[in-house]
Amino acid sequence: MTLQNEESNSIPVADVVADIDAAESLPELVQETATRNFYEYSLPELEEFLISRGHKKFRAQQVFKWVYEKRVEDYEQMSNVSKAFRAELPTLFHFALPKIVTELKSKDGTRKWLHEIDGMTVETVLIPNKDRLTLCVSSEVGCNMACRFCFTGKQKLKRRLTTGQIIGQFLHAQDSLAKEGLRVTNIVFMGMGEPLDNAEAVFRSIEILHQPNGINMSRKKITVSTSGIVPLIPLVTKSGTRLAVSLNAPNNEIRDFVMPINKKWDVWQLLEACREHYRESGDRITFEYVLLKGITDKLDQARELWNLVRDVPCKINIIPFNEHPGSGFERPTPESVIAFQQELIRLGAHVLLRRTMGRDIFAACGQLTSKYEGRPDRLDVQPGL
Ligand code: SAH
Ligand code: SF4
Image (cartoon, rainbow, N blue to C red; front, side, top):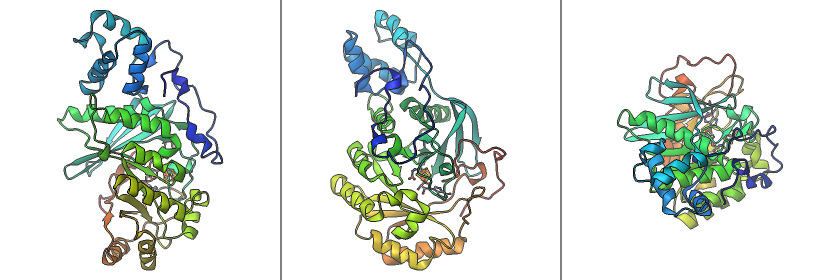
């Protein structure tokens, strides 16, 4: 990867998903500017660029540390940077993050930020759980995978986010938590969009998040969730992050119906890619399984699901369907959710029930969208199952 113009943030993965509908025409990623947005680049790219301008490699590390570790954007405060270099920096880089439109807090402690990107909103959700603060980041506005149960999927892909727009979601949350002496402990790419449909920007932001001279987030604290773009799963393995796979059905027939991507890469191909990930990384896969009333929540489907995944080292995360307007699906009763979980446990599965968080501020899985006219900010629901 080389540091070129910001517009060169190309998306090679588009070849792989060529027959998935193309995005509406992509806009310029940033406004015309002579300087580069610092947040778009990984450390090796910054080093390469500064070397090409006649600077020493360590200069990149110095600035990187100020920006990401100390959260300083004012070059004048970068006291260990030489005066001459400090004077040159504003001619090379500017700092641009997506603007925060609102920050909402749920009754259960979940927080949601709305960021503005080209007049649309992108949602980022912080989920507190015991001693963890997990940040769920978005990778795209809209999504072309069109899963039937997902609110984001109702909107075709509008934008693939740039690295700076992904990193910006993290920095806003982290800056806000820092005021309370808290910090993000885990990151999941489970917000709006399919991360492997925006692989270049996603994996570059993972490199930035992990960089020891900056944010220093362990790779194992980062999870990439995919609907199953099978040929790109090895990129997750290579990045050293955890893999989550939205399985959501116990067989090809139902998966074809709820997740159209299954017609391209079916369950068998997907599971083989998961086994390969385990062989290479030694990390168990998380299978996400949305329970849709009367469609995926029957007890014999729990058994079918177990037979499907039992030879893949994994845990199963069951998620009761979160309702959204016009979905055509219903949320299962708490009793049937527990019965499904108990059946899996009886069979020997490692299964977690994802407690629904943030439903009152539309921050729960599958409730994220960039626009829904008339949707209230809040819904009067009680936290819990
Ligand atoms: N595109 C990626 C990551 C974003 S979706 C993926 O599909 O994995 C994150 C998770 O939300 C997925 O596991 C998906 O199955 C789940 N999800 C989507 N819509 C949902 C809904 N309405 N209720 C509950 N979970 C949902
Ligand atoms: Fe896209 Fe994931 Fe929603 Fe499917 S579940 S439409 S892949 S965001």
